[in-house]
Image 1 (spheres, rainbow, N blue to C red):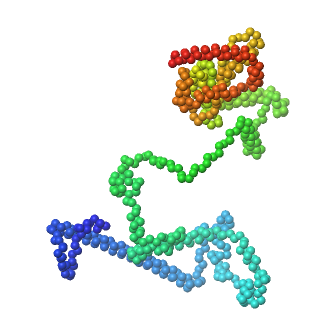
Image 2 (cartoon, one colour):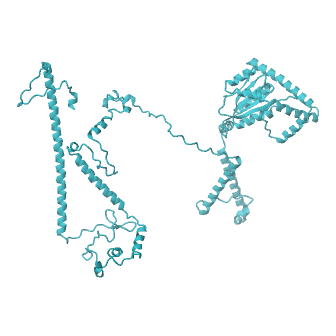
Image 3 (tube, helix red, strand yellow):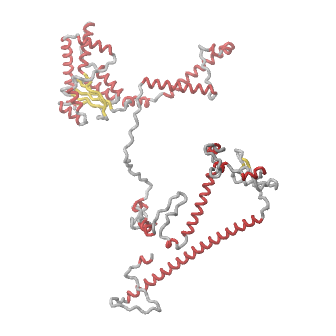
Length: 603
């Protein structure tokens, strides 16, 4: 490392040894000056000191490694010698005293457990007998079986080469039994795999210790530049990749001195390196950087299916089924004794049937008790209702939510109304104030060609506003009739004229509302009215009102019978009634023109 800081031009010329003759100087060698000689001498002294220090460190490391190897070898020899001495002593004393018996207990399964918690196999080699008569050195011999060695076994009988009388077509005795034993279910003894794992761990530990001792030797890397492929990690059984020292050095050079994510927090950036005083502490804050989420390259999963909306009848049926299931579960708990049964509900009407003996003994006291229980039940009922009662603010919020929310969730309902005649101030006030009270947004345009009402809001508010324009507001102004017949005819004419004055052009759903509130504005021309709607992105509303005004959506009347009667009466009317209705409509139109002129003047 010291040579990296020295320049090649300042490298001093090596001095000749004392016994070597002086080197002949060539004519191209330049004679250094006095200052260069002093600098070369200082550099040579520093280099010699660095080389001496490196040599001394290498010698110390080598001596330390040799001492460690010798110490380990001596320790291994001592352990081997101790083992041999112990074995020889045991062989010399076969009648040694029996070892001291260990503590034996029984576990929950009835097995014998020693003091270390391991199971003791019955009849095994580890029996601890204290009496000499119970200490059997070998298994008992049966004198009747001593000559059985001369009798050939089943395997020799089945061997045709040694048995000339063997017939392969006949079954060998015991072969089926052996096959059944192999097919039988054999359980693995407890602790089998644990012992195998312990043996593997011990083997891995020994091999790891041997590898560590070999890597501590100084001459291993020089003698073996390549890593052997057979040296594998015993834990996973994978062989180490073949890599030379030069390749390993090149791979290590690829590691940057400063990582790119740390360069922004260092004063010198990537060139400054890691230093204690080089960290920009002002860039480290308590904020957490959240990376921008990136969509996966695969296609997104399909959306889940939309839940099917239930009808009112289906919701009532599900509620009844839930209540029945809860009541049945309660009865089952009472029947099993998990819940106390409720007290009997006694009233004046069933007093004698429920409390026979008590009612006969003291009817007045029992009646007073029953009346007190009835009063308590009524009081509890009223308290529950009072607890569920909404506050005035909650009632207003609930009413507003019912007006605004659309249970279908498909968009904002919109309805277009076309009014042929300009309404007077009273009708304009009704149209404006009812739209505000029902939380509807939209616009009413007053023009010469036709008048358009656009309302946006919830379904309930739309129904109420539809009933106002088509039923509640009287668009015809007829005088009082003299007799009953004239009154009926006038009522039919008024109904027919009213249906012709106000019509529903279109109703449907839009993605989002186009208006923030409801306003009444007057337009001087049809182009001006269309321009007002075009500013809000709904100019097609005016086109629909102009072209499809006479073919609007039929109105929804609550009383269908009255509609049928009105339809039949309209078919039989004469031309005189039509002229009367046209005259009434003309008078209303004149009054509406005056109202529109007043609004334009005020504007």
